[in-house]
Every structure is written in structure tokens, then in C-alpha cells.
Length: 322
Image (cartoon, rainbow, N blue to C red; front, side, top):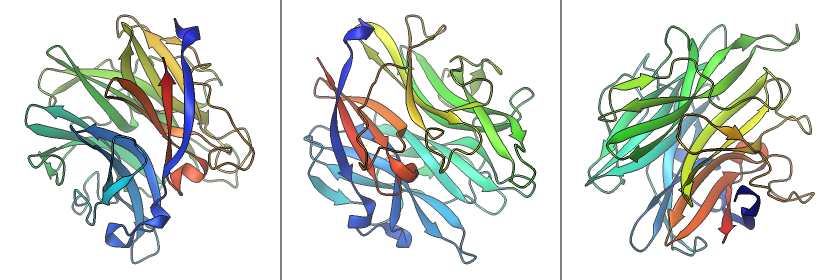
């Protein structure tokens, strides 16, 4: 069945530089995440502004699009959630935010980040809720619901949540550590995909430090942003992966999209041939394909993803061909 999965690229559908975003944000629409309504699709993304020292801060905004996923209805003129308070895990940004409906409430699982001294950043996963159909979100608390622990020492983030039966499932990333690859370069991080479950979406139990998707590039492969969907009775996970070092500008070492499948949500078989998204030199996604998000809309399965420069100039779309 997997060999028959074919994806058709539909091109870039949103460029943040063509719109007025909140907080003076002018570039980046990273990690697009969809919330489907009856007559439109709201796509959340992480955008950036500069603080007083010239460093980036990440904010969550959204674009509402018609269900053809081409026509823009509106772009949010304010960020949907403020950044965390002084010293909190999300003080300097939220990237990404995954949204899931539960009754009349929309849960937003945030990946908050904060700057460090010896290394550049640490992350954790927070929870915010919306009672106005996702226009604004309010934190359940100032701390995270999933964070570093005994065997996952850093960089817990990128939570993707799916409610299956009565159980909340979260696929997320955890850091295995930081490493200096050369004496004149700052430390780089490595992270893998993990899994946790919950009965209420707040208290979570991890499969502590179990890497559920095997490496393809060796132990220094970094895996990010898992997203899971059920197609024809089988669960499919899409994510992005790269080398942990020298990945920002070196050709062939940056993010590309990976895939794994499972019949029981426990054991995952890696199969990166799907999706195979064609690369055309000079195109917006030629150098990099990253931050995938799969969702269903009116019986069709779509894949949102970012392209070159980590989504500086927006995101595009692919559709699963039946």
C-alpha cells in the first residue's frame, strides 16, 4: 500500500512578506498547522520580530484560507498568544504551536523557547486553550506540561497531539545533548522523536528516552516536527531530519522530509521514499523541505511544509493522490 502513496506538489500558498503581520513581523511563516472549519481552513504559523537588542522573538499568527487552500480570507492582525513572562520557558518565543479540537475548546500545544548562556536555546511544551475558535489562547499555567527529565535532558518540543479513542497521544522531540563539532563553531544540538500519552491532555506519561523512529544519517541525525495521520487503516508519520552540524547553508545537509508507518502506534517502520516531493533547481523549496504538517480536509489529505531558509518566505502544499 505504501508504494502507492503519491503526492502532488501544489506550490507555495502563503508568503508572509506579502502581508502585514502583527508586532512588526515581516518574515517567516514557519511550521504551518491547520485547524479545519466548515467553510475555511485556519493555518497557524510562527513568525518573527526583533527585540531591542536585535535578536529574534517568535510569535504565533494565522492565516484563514478558503478550502481551495489558495485564496486568503484574512491574516491575523495580532498574535494569538503573548510570550511567556520573565524567566519562563517561553520567554523568547513560541515555535511551533499545534492545535487540536476537544468539544468546544481548542487546545494549543506550544513549543516555548528561551535563550541560554552556554548553549543557544532550550525548549519545553506548554498548553494553552481557546474558547473563541482559536482567535486567542490563554495559558493553562506558566510552566510546561512536558519538559526535560532524567533521561531526556534538554530540548523537549515540537509536540503534535492526536486524540485516539479516550487517549491523548503526543509525538514530540527530545534532545540527546549538545556537541561542539569544531573548535571555532558554537555547540550544535541533536534531537530524536519520542512519544507520550495522557488521559486529559495535561498530565503526560513519556516513553522515557525511547527513540521511536530509527536514524538514517547516523547517531548525529536530528529529527524534528512529527505529524501523524491515519490513511487506509495505517498510521503514517511525517517529520523532517537533517545532519546536526553544518546544516544551515551546506548543500545536502539541511532538512528534508522523512516518513514512517505503524499499525499499532508502538513500532514504527521508516520509509523515507514517501513523500517524494520533486526538487526543481531555483524553486522556493529546492534547498530545504522542512516542518511538515498533515491534515484531512473534505476527504482529501494535504501536507503543509516550509522550504528554503527554514520558512523565511512562507509555506507550500502537497496533496495525496488517491
